[in-house]
Length: 73
Image (cartoon, rainbow, N blue to C red; front, side):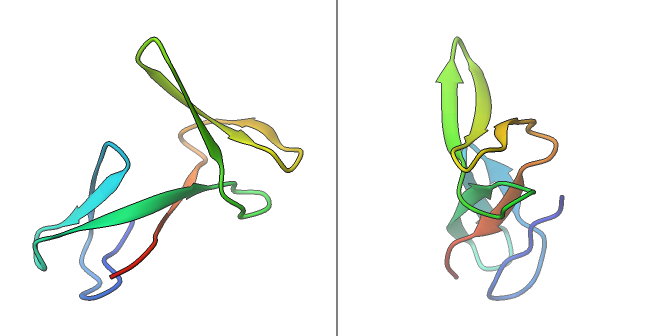
């Protein structure tokens, strides 16, 4: 899934839960959301692995299915 900058609409580079816009030269926080209910996911970190869990009944969500949404410009 491609994430675009809310200010200039160019693609963002995602690193460690933060997106960076090379055009605006800004770090933009992002939020992981469930692809089913679109509500925020809980991030589970263990032994270097990162998993996502939906507390709204959808259980574990694969990183490939997570929707990342920029929180601000």
